[in-house]
Image (cartoon, rainbow, N blue to C red):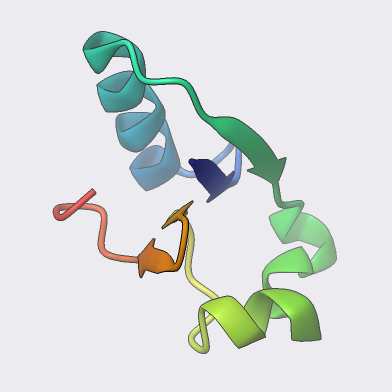
Amino acid sequence: MRLHHAPSSPHSASVRIALAEKGLAWDSAELDLARFANFAPDYLALQPSGQVPLLEDGTCTIAETAFI
């Protein structure tokens, strides 16, 4: 499982907390929103709107915080 997130994002923080509370292992892909890393072509290929967080698990990607 890989979490694309930003340290300054409250939505990212809530997902990190939920993953920690469930004891799930995940890899971190930290995005620098100040440098617009969420609009890089490789990230936009995963999340066309450029929003964070995004959770990848195999071939499944979930971009809606409430569903993660």
